[in-house]
Image: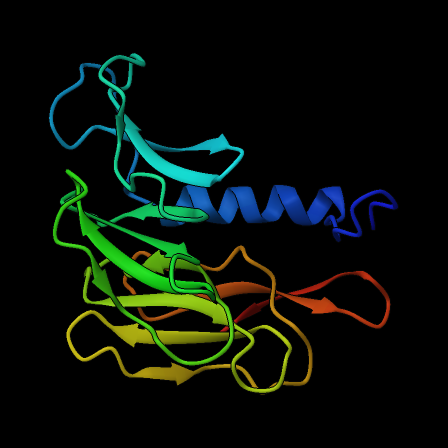
Length: 193
């Protein structure tokens, strides 16, 4: 389904249910009440100047702005140890992938190629990050990069665009994603790679 007002493509409700089940089944990054360090919730704070990634305790207390107003910062995802947060930011003119510590310090830019890199997701081993990018021809493709060497490897074939909802299997060997049928303006297949 496509929104006439925004032009944004929305998934069929059944696809949403499948992706939610897949994400819940593939993630061990749940939060529990109590506010212990590492149980934080990452969220977006929207302003006229962009979006910031913030952190708070599970009960909503102790909010902290982690990105400090530098452009649009989106798609936060905690590492399994909750010591690091990966996200996309346009602070350098295009969306790239960044990693920071849970306190907002030690920011590392992971990608620098032309094009927009979005929707990063940590692998369960915290050594790889999956993301989507339009760097190779204008349609969104699925990539994986190493936390250590930052070399991105394309995992999809360029035949159709990829949605933002990729999810790792618990063992880190498989990625699930939604393939978009852009010519039809709707979501297509749930795929594994």
